[in-house]
Image (cartoon, rainbow over all chains, first blue to last red; front, side):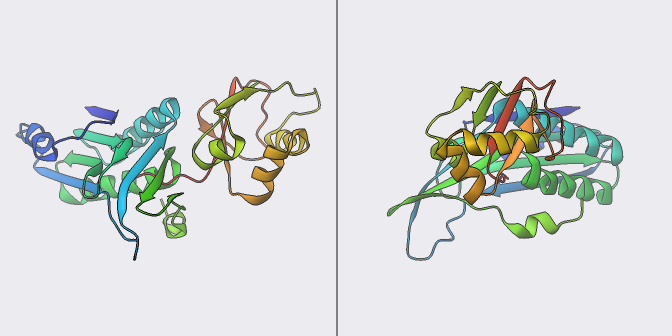
Length: 146
Length: 82
């Protein structure tokens, strides 16, 4: 089962994990949770705004999950990505991969987040107490071999 | 053809979308970029000074991609999700 959600509302990752634990056969579950960070020295981050291209974002996340699903034999895969204005420490993205063996669950999860980082059409804009600016792509993300 | 913009490029263009009619000799993304560069100052500024990606009907494409069958073109900065 592949579940893709793009939403402005917050999510409860513990609840999402509990749903996965109902699977009695596949015991390996890997969860990636990305949250809003405040890394700017001197300026306080007030909001992180996330804009996205709805039709394409859904398509990219679905195709990425599908690739991982078949390549690593997943039984379940969930991707939640948020948009709108978020506060520091609020969750942005949740990826859960579940399969029989831990290595496959880890690899599938890493593949999804790495692929998403350079292909899924989401953009972050930071609003600090002084100014607002679009976040630049981290060039290191482009070097990852996926 | 419908062109849509996102994030910083939407702000630089000052609009979310517009329709542009391309002459027949605009066949690839590269031709389109060359045409738009001369179309107005906003496009010229975006293509000259900023990193951008192009998606045709929700698929990222290269500069040699043929746009004849495309319904919607999106121009946006490198992505920063996750």
